[in-house]
Structures are given as C-alpha cells and as structure tokens.
Image (spheres, rainbow, N blue to C red):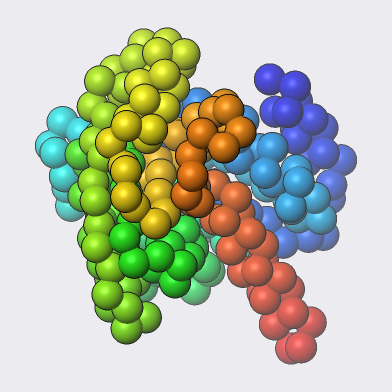
Length: 245
C-alpha cells in the first residue's frame, strides 16, 4: 500500500504533458504493487498509470483459451490507454498476451507483452527450460511463446512443464501463503534436471524471493522486471524519435 501511495504522489506532482507515459494493463489487482515498485525503481523519470480489469482473466479461464471477444476488449483497453495519454502500453498478464499481437498491428504506440523479454532471455541462455504456472491458460501460451522465440533465434530447446493448479484458487481466495508454499514445493521437486526455470505468471515472482538462498540451483527468470526494462527502452526510443523530429 505504501508503494502505491508513493507512486501516486510521484505521478500527482509530474506535469501530465511533460514526460512520456506508460500504461500498464493488469488482470489482477494483486500485481499492481509489484509493478508499481518496479516502475518507481526503473521509470522514475516517466509518468505511469495502471488499468485493472479482472474480467479479462476470468473470461479466459472460463473458456480455457483467449476468446476473440476478450482479445477485442484488450484492444479496446489499449485504445483507452492511448486516449488517456499513454505513449506505450505494457500488458502484464500472460494469459491474454496473444491479444498484444493484434494491438501491435492496430496502434502506432508500442504495445508490449509482459513475457516477451523473459522468453527471449530464456532461449538464449538454456537448452532445457522448466516452465512453471498455476493455470493452463497461462502455461500453454508461455510454452508457445518460448517455441516461437527459439525458432526466431535458431535455437533448439526442450521445455518441461510444471503446472501447479492447486495454487491458483488459493491466491484467488487471498491465501497468498498457501499459494507461495505450493509453488515453492513444485519448483523444488518437479523441475530437476533443467538448465533454467521460467515463471509464466508475474504473480509468481515473489515466490522465488521467499526461498532460502541456494534452494534453487539453476537461474530463475520472471517477467515483471524484464518487462519494465523493455518498456523503459520503448519510452526512451520514443523520446529520442520526438527529439530528432
């Protein structure tokens, strides 16, 4: 809560038209503090605002896939962000990540997928990658994205999936301790022999921070910080382009 208040105070004192602006589109309020903290750390010179629509992930989970109607709504949110002054939009939910590809074709501003930078880093660093998620609707798109990035990079990778389905109802019920315990157990017991672990959901990032030092003997990549750093590059590129005009 303190992070969010500090972020609001920073935004309140920045003239709206003076700096480039990043909009973040979330499907859960639980990840807002995570991204707010990262934006404070890496984007202090930029304006940031958050948009939350839980129905996007709820619809996707009910259907078991990203429906066209849901993708259209993601595109509408990107349009709303642009109308509110955003110079770039970061979509922070992997389950609706495929909709960013559509939005990228429709808008001139950068529309960033939260796990793009993570997937690129993973396939460049490892041949055997463990992919952990708590919902199938996130696991499958992440696996597909990793295969796509590996093909683009000319790399062969082996993907080992780890689906911890019992953890997601716990976090929905507000029991983050149970969620984190279940995910921790899965990471430690089900991904032996991999070179690197990818956490498919931004909400899983804090789990690794809570593990004892050295508990995981391979690198673990999470999407939030890498995505915010990618957004920073996009904002800086836009600022430079404007300066050159």
